[in-house]
Amino acid sequence: MKRSAAYDRLERVSDELESARFALSVIVRDWHRHLASAIKRKGQLLSLGDLQRCLDNLEPTYIVRLFATFEGILRDYWAGAMRRKSEPTMTRLMDRVAARRRMDAATLANAHEIREFRNQIVHENVDVLVFDFGQCGKRLGNYLSWLPLEW
Amino acid sequence: MTQAVDQVRHHREQWLDRLRHLADQVTKWSEAQGWTVERARKEINEEGLGRYDAPSLTIHVPGGEILLQPVALRVIGGEGRVDLRARPTLARVKLLPTKNGWGIMTDSNVPLRQPWDANTFVQLVRDLIS
Image 1: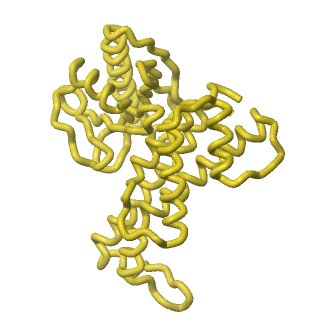
Image 2: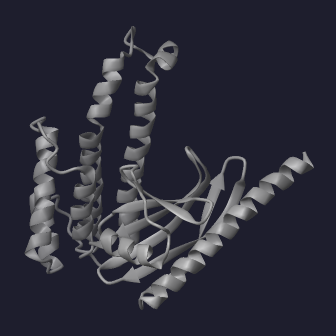
Image 3: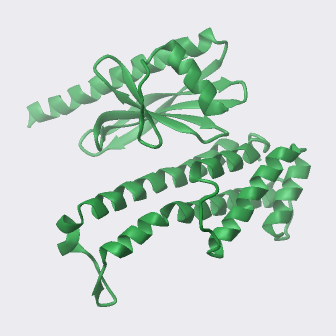
């Protein structure tokens, strides 16, 4: 994989978040116009509240996706460049890749904070978005900058 | 029918002219800073406009790269869009054509009301990469 392709993947997630946010916000804003075409779900029509909740949770949902994409890139590096067959935990994977690339401690620590934040989102333990999507992207992107141009 | 096809071709050519001019402008401003610029072509396929190759740039700056990437002519709420993306920070602003040049839109959809010139570009690059 080329490092530029890894960035392309992360940027695509960002673009999809933007598209989803736009589409949902348009429907929520003009709800009455879209009411007639609301899709049937288990015999019930979608409510404005369903869509508003989806919109409210969009950013954390996409942070989870962003992190999953990041994880996929690291696992590709682990198997392809480091020629490992094991499936380490994400903590260990991030530490081992960082050690291999002689990454600075701050970059690794910043990326770990995003991992912990992702875990909090997954376990529905987040009241406030401590990191927004852009901050998550920046920290994970900085981590990836330590990988070689191609592996 | 032929007239409609000519009109589409005309729109596409006008758009490509603007993109070529933008790429030349950004190349000049970047090289004046001592930044290396790689030119490439990006294939875009737009409904109604067909497939075309647009100029794109990768600018190597201290601390990362800046990508100038045309997105499309037909976009919601505008007449064309070019992305200025930074790596590794993944920060981005959108450039939207205006009468006299390009307007800058942040990812929060708040416009950055600065003139599109060399100073703004250089400052933007530094902000995107930091």
